[in-house]
Length: 194
Image 1 (cartoon, rainbow, N blue to C red):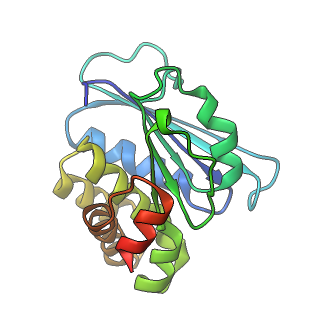
Image 2: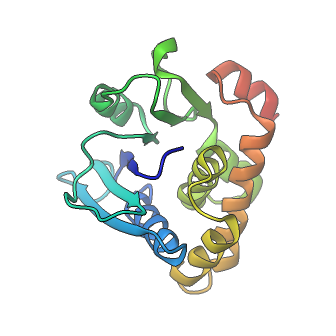
C-alpha cells in the first residue's frame, strides 16, 4: 500500500465505528504517522448512519476529509450501498464488508473482501460490541498500515475501562479471521471460518 491512506469506516450507530476510528488514528500517531480523523452521525445514536474518516500519511495532510478512499469498511448493508459508489479508483481500494449484515451485490471490479465480523465476535468472544475491534484487526491484517503491536497497545490505551484485554482479543481474532478466510467472496469466507 502507498504512503497515504484514506479510510472510511461505515455502518450503523451503535456499532462502535467512531471509537474504532479514534483508536485507528491514535495507533497511527503512535506509529509516527500524520493523521486526521473526522466523524459524522445519522439522526439517531443507535441504528442511524455512522461514518468516520481517517487519513494517514507520512507527509503533511492539507485537507481533512476523505476524498478518494483507499480502504472502505462497511458493517451494514445501508453503508455498503451508500459508500461503495464513492470509490474513484475501482480496483485500487480495499473493500472489507461484514457478511453478517452485508449481502452485496458484489461486483468483481470492486474486489470486495467479505468476513463474518459480527458473527465471529458473538460466537468466539461472546460480545457483539467488540466487532469494531475485530474489524480493525481484519483491516490492519489485510493492509499492514500500522505495526500490529503498536495497534494493540493503542487499543488497550483507549478501550473503555476494564475492557482493554477483551478488545485486544477481538483485534487478534480479526487477524486470525483474515488469515483463515480468503475474503474473496461471502460464501468462501463463511466456509473457511467454520
